[in-house]
Amino acid sequence: MPFENAKLTETRKWRTWTASLLLLSLLICFAGIETGLVYAIRKPYSRGLEWPVLLIGIVAFLTLIAGYMPIPFELLKRRGRVVGIDFIFLAIDWNGAFFSLMALVTQNEFDVLFGTMYALWYVLVNEQSFGKKTNGV
Image (cartoon, rainbow, N blue to C red; front, top):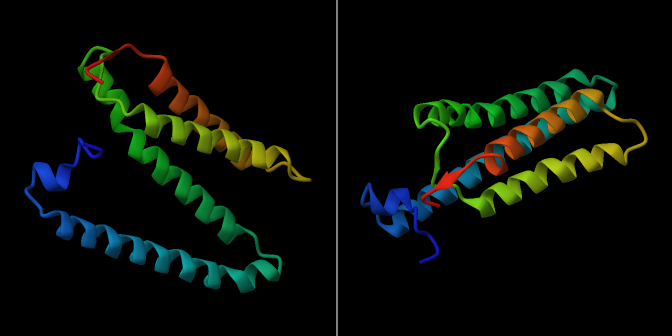
């Protein structure tokens, strides 16, 4: 079964069709927000105003980190034992951080702020996924 941990369809007894519609509506909503932000920032950025782009990048990074904040507390609660790691997801996440950092390295001008953020994310994902003992994968 490809979706063993399907939370909405298993534990909450949602039908697959209902969960799929929820996913589709969220994807449309997020695409609309991203498109709106691109059009809202395009004019100020072309006039040389760079802080809105920087602010969106910082908010995105903080949101990403906030999603991983419960993990260390869960590790403390379980005394370092990791239960239920999805190594495919972690490999994709790790590659995303690594290649984003490499994309910054290949630019003409290195962005120190985002380079630091990607490097910290790389270390955080690496520490939480490959440095711990796992039980019950």
